[in-house]
Image (cartoon, rainbow, N blue to C red):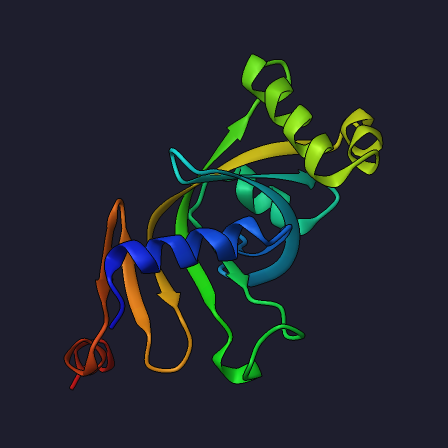
Length: 169
């Protein structure tokens, strides 16, 4: 297994090179919804911010403030083996960043820098909302044979004994 510092740097590169994340939410009846959303990552807090339309089902799920799942995955084109792509997934608390707040205006500027002029158009629409996704725990897969649990600042390798515990053996 790699040293924690090397894993953290690799994980940060994966996140920094991505523009979108996969968002997993559930409605009130427990029906899952998966979708794609743009994001901004705040490296110091390790929080993710996404801008989403109320016209999308996942936005109503986020507004309910139920935990959500996110995943960022290495591009298929650059991966040495498509089945061993690097990926990180987190279970997140959800908090809306209200439009009128100073922090929301600062986030809008970051979204514009990252995604360009389309964000100016989207943010003028009243149905777009910004949500903060605060990771509670996660898992980083660094390819075949490289799996790590993530909680706060802690990065711990997952070994065969950990897998047996999860599987109930």
